[in-house]
Length: 73
Ligand code: HEC
Image (cartoon, rainbow, N blue to C red; front, top):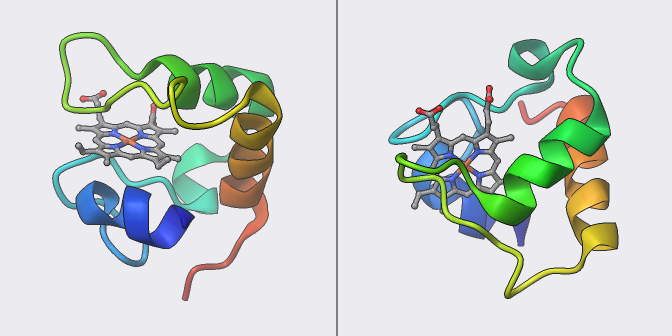
């Protein structure tokens, strides 16, 4: 789900495409709550869409933690 929905903009290896890279290296030092908030509400003025209508806060936190630790290659 993350790879398909997020990969359309962030690239299938999350190294960035239309969107910024969201690899563990690029996000190192970011806290999961902050990333979950970005995922839920998007980034105003950019192509990063809010996902709040589609996913719960728990799911956003899960994705944030997944992005922080997953090796995508
Ligand atoms: C319609 C295209 C699009 C989709 C789909 C998308 N993003 Fe993004 N995302 C962006 C763009 C563009 C940015 C960079 C915004 C900017 O210029 O700061 C971004 C930024 C981010 C950031 C912040 C990166 C940083 O360094 O601050 C995170 C985290 C993120 N996206 C996660 C996700 C996740 C998780 C998904 C899937 C649920 C997703 N995105 C789906 C376009 C998208």
